[in-house]
Image 1: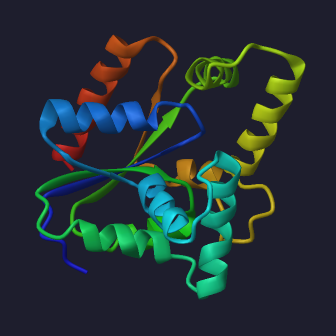
Image 2 (image 1 turned 90 degrees about the vertical axis):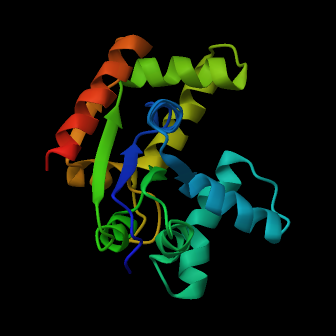
Length: 193
């Protein structure tokens, strides 16, 4: 599929590593069209009257491609939305099959975003307005484990494998100014590829 895009940056990484922040920055600072796998899955959840909790969305993200017999269905839906976009950023790539689909698009590059477990856990607590406790830590560990792709058999999330496919990986543990500089540097490298 030819999207006529000059550059499409896919963003992958673990939960709360900074994928959304990266997408926001590219969109607001450089004018990239912004979309996400989460948005596509939430739209399907709404269509099926599924409450959009993280667990429900992860389950739908895994089960819907199985039901349709098409592991790349989410990437195909995203690809359709990119028609005519000059510069685009796609957040939340968590399945290597989606990378395979997106790599067929003109100008596609994959950016990985990582952060320490502790930093991501603290972001999770803050974003969800939670108080640290052994229960919350265990729950986040379970969500994180599922996100990284344990036992998904090619259809579910596997952010670990996606990070291995990234052209560039950014570490997001040093605050937003440093992270924004890193994103700008990565964009410069992508433009020179």
